[in-house]
Length: 363
Image (tube, rainbow, N blue to C red; front, side):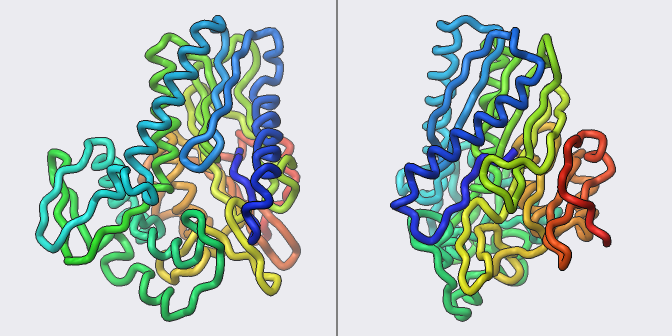
C-alpha cells in the first residue's frame, strides 16, 4: 500500500492536513494486516524520516522490548538519512564531488546502493536513473521548491542523454567502495528511488536480530512483513490512485518475509490546465512518465521492489518484460484509458489480489 500523500501546488498551508491523512492511511494498512489477529499483542510506533512517514508494528513483544526496538529503528532512520539525502549538504551522498579523473572512497552502504542503481539502470534500458537530482530540482519536485513546468530548454539541458540514459556518465564504481569521476562537473546523485527500500530492509533485519520476528515495517510506500503470524495472514490495502487517500482499490496478500512497494502519480504532483504533472520522470524525455498511474510490486526485498516500482511505472506493462530476469517480482498496474481507470496484473500477482474494484484494461 502507498502511504505517500498527494502534494498540491500550495504546500505550507497543507502540512497539518497531510500528516492527518497519513495517519488515516497507516491505520487502514494496519487494520488490514491485522485481520483475524485481534488476539495478538501488538505494539505500534510512527515517526518521521527521509521526508516521509515511518511505521513499525511489533507482535508478541513486551512493552519494554518494544520501546527499545522503536528507539533503535528511529536511530537507524537518522543514520541512513545522513548517508543518502541528496539535499542535506552534510550527507555522504551529497558530498560526492570532484573533478575529472578523481578517485574517491565512499561509505560501503552508499557504494552498494549506487552500484545497484547503476546496474538497475542498465537492466531497465534507462527507465531507472539515479542522475535525476537536477531535473527534479528544476521541476520543483525534489525538495522544498514550488512545483512548476520548467522551460523546455532547461529540461533538455538536464535530462540524461546518450550513455547517461542507462547510467550517469559522471562516474563509475570500482571494487572496494571506490568511484571515479569521469568529468569536471560536480556529481548530483539521487538515490531516493531505492534508499527508502533499503531502509525498510534494514528495519526488518534489525528486528530479526532482536528476536522480534513477527513485525510489519514501512517507510512511505515501502512495506515489509516478518514471519508468519499466529493468527491470520499478512494483508495490506492498495490505495485507489484516483480516490481519497483512505480509499482502497484492492487488498493484497503477502507471504511471510515479503516486501511490497507502490509508486503513484498522486504522491507528489500539481495540476495545470487540467494536466497532472508528477515526480516520477521518464529519463528519456525529462517529463513525467505517462505509461502508468500507479504500480505495486512484490518481491523478496524492498531495495528491489523500490527500484522496480519506479522502473515498471516508467515502462508500463508492455515493456516490463525487459526486467523479467532481474529478480522475481509480481506487479499490479493502474492505468488511464478512454473508459477510465483500468488495471493490469502480472500472472503471479493475480492470486494475491482480492476485492479488486478497478476493471481490467482491454488491451
